[in-house]
Length: 206
Image 1: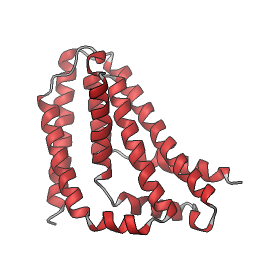
Image 2: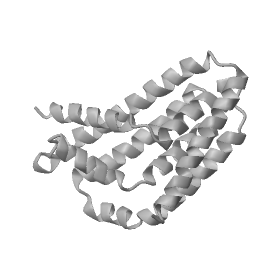
Image 3: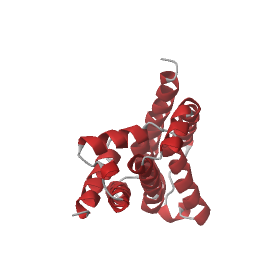
Image 4: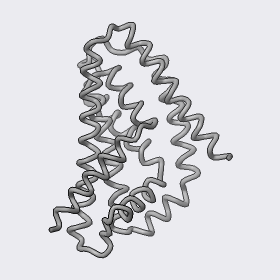
């Protein structure tokens, strides 16, 4: 009976990850620029952040949640600045001609950590997960700790599934593109990421 919580968590993680935003564009850009492994590791960083925020929502860790929400102004400010940096970097960056050239241990760990921190820069995600849990009847607060854990694991795996699927599809597209196309797609993705970053900063003053 508890297994239904895993299934619901999986669907929640899959659905939330599939929403197109700056993280999606960044993962696609990284995959096109450096290959599947780099993009997939970035996607797993997002899935980790989704799992952490889902855990805070599911287990009701109110003290940590309130702390993060109270700091959201500074966290979102740093997140917006970081997006602008990544956007400019993508515009100026030349895509690797061979995907393996970017698959060093340092590069992969940097890809994972940078996008993990960027995803965590939106504390409101906790509220999103809490709202979705309630809306879909995933009232883990009235269930066992096992049920809550299954929801969180389901969210993380569902999110990871989406990112592996997305980066895999982008990799197939990458194989059909010439270096010239990759450069222009890189620039376009960089501009989109840059706009997201500027919008995040502007939103702080609206």
